[in-house]
Image (cartoon, rainbow over all chains, first blue to last red; front, side, top):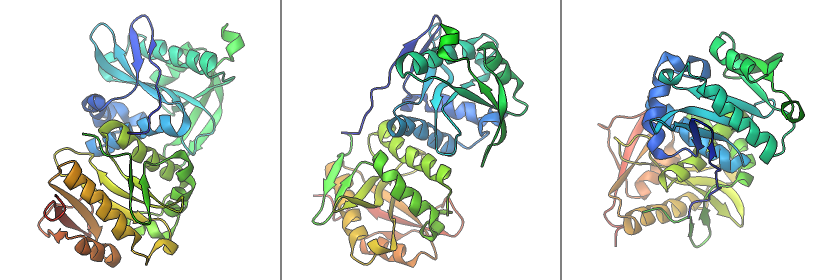
Length: 175
Length: 170
C-alpha cells in the first residue's frame, strides 16, 4: 500500500487541524484562484493548486512534519492551512498560515497557528521557529505579532522574493 | 482500487518514491536531461516536485514509481492525474545517461501499463512528449501508443500519444 505517515489531528476551541485529503481540493483551488492568495504564490491555475496540495501531502513524508487543513468546527468547512514547513530553500523551520478570505477577521489564523506551534515545541521538541511574511502582507504580519513573534531580519527566496522574518518566542518564554 | 505499491520486472523494481531518492532526483533536475520538461530546475524546485510526486500517491492512491535497478534509483515511471477532466497522463524518465540504452524504460513502462490496464481496469492513458524528444517518441510507439495530433497539449511543442488498453488487458 501507499507509504503512509500518521498525521496527527489537533483540536482547538473552534478549529480542527487535520491531514489534507483529496476532498479539500475544491477549497484549496478556490483559495488559490483569487488575488487573496497573492502573498503566498497565487493566484494560480487549478492544476498548480492541485500540485501544491500534493506537495503539502508529500512534505509530511519527506520531512516527517508538515501543514494541516484547518476546519471550522461550527460549519465543518475547510477554512485554510497552517503548519510546519521546511522545503528545500527555506532558511529554517517555518510556521505558516493561509486563511480563506471568508474566514478572516475572527482570530482563526492565530488560534490555528498557536496549536501548530505548540505541537512543534511540545511534541517535536523544537526550540525555535520563524514565520516568513511577504512584504506588504500586513494581515499576516499582524498575526505574527499577536503570536508574540518579533521581526528578525529578512530572507530572499529564489521564487517568492524578499520576505520579513518573524521569530517566535522560545518554548520557555511561552510556558 | 489503489495501485500496487511495488511492481517487479525481470531486471527492475518499481516502488514508491522515498526520501532517499531525493538526491538522485535533484541531480536529474539540475542536469540537461530535464530540458524536455522545462528544466533544468533548482534544488528547491526539485524538492517541491518530488514532494508532489509522493503526495500524489497519498491523495489518489496511485502515482509514479521510482525505477530501481540493483537497489539504485535510475528514473521514474507511471500515471498522474491532476485534473480529473482529462484522462490520466503517463510519464517515464531515466535520470542519467548511463541508464539509457538497456531497455529499462521500455521494461518499466510495460509493467506499469499492464498493471493499470489488466489489474486496475483503466481504459487509456495519454503521454505528452516534446516533438524534439525522439527517444521518448520512439518508446511511445514501441509501447503501442498512437500519436493524436488533434489532442490538446499542455505545453507548446508537445505531441500527444494515447495508449489504449487493447493488448495489455487480459
